[in-house]
Length: 479
Image 1: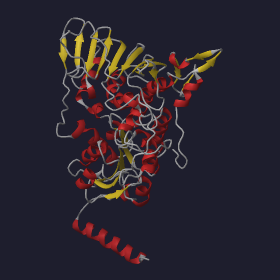
Image 2: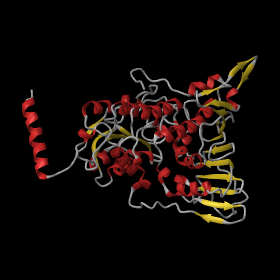
Image 3: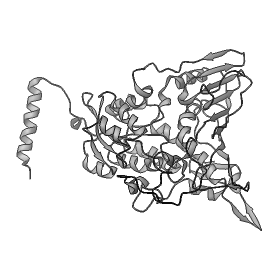
Image 4: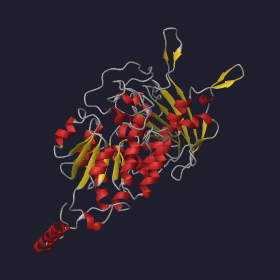
């Protein structure tokens, strides 16, 4: 057992030396929970170190602005680049063990598959760790609401990783709309070329050899148990409802963010979807309920907001489908991205605003025929991802409720309702092929317009659809 007397003596000597040297550094322990001295570096634990997790770690570290103290990943081969980049970081496979052992962590990045976001993030918040969570914030609507409320309950600085939210393009579009250039907006189109991974396929039944060193039990986490298969890990998990949220969940937080933010939208009131099908050799449509569809169309209806005094119908398409050119946009102009593969169109009474992924390439088309190309380059060009991770780091140092915290563009107060709205589309997509026995046949009530009570998180005209509001957690896992 270590001597408490010696420990106290060491603290006294250290404190005396600092005072004698005239150094006025205030240690974080003196400032209290949630506040870090500006002279200190943020101590960050990275959970999910491969793929996007690696870039999140590098961007939060930002050439030494933060300290990457620990890296947790169930697949150390996938996290090899992160381990090499941060050799002093402690290594873990189980985030729960990390939290048990690393008591000096200030903040956490969560860059894991969608199905584990909520349980990891909530555990971190319960331990008073600030959180940066990749999009979509959660796997289910209930989880998004739960984390939004928890961030405020625990006084946690939060940020979702939809980096376009901090870009100049979104600010440009906000300025245009706030100035009344296109008037009230009643119609929005959003589209993506995703999925670029397998979807609309049968559930695998073979059992290939487990990847060496992969902790599959922790990878599955709270989801329904399935055996390992390369159609799940790595990356292809996005196309399975058990783990991912499909094309809409993957790209919605990037593409729906601009109109949601610019128009000041809240909870939708209605949703309706249809899905593409893959046909068998007998030209019979195949439907695989565990797999996200190969393509889909969804319409969300939003009530008028304080910023936009008009109901809005937002039309989403994926699988490479996109809207046609509105009359105001010249035929030889791309819409959205340079190749028109992803984008946003906001149609107002006096004109149209368009942009590409992450709010890039904003353009204004006025009824007068005038066309204005906006600035989409962020002024802080030396900061990664529009400064999105850096702003979070600085807000963590200042603490919950600080001016820097209030200036964050995707804290859970915003990211939670945005994620809920996006996942409403998935609720309708998953409800599409639900059927009920009616007389001598079946009906498909999920193929009608679904009415949503956003405050109470319920579909009011088709009870079976409410099974997709929240998920069941595997035994041993709770939120």
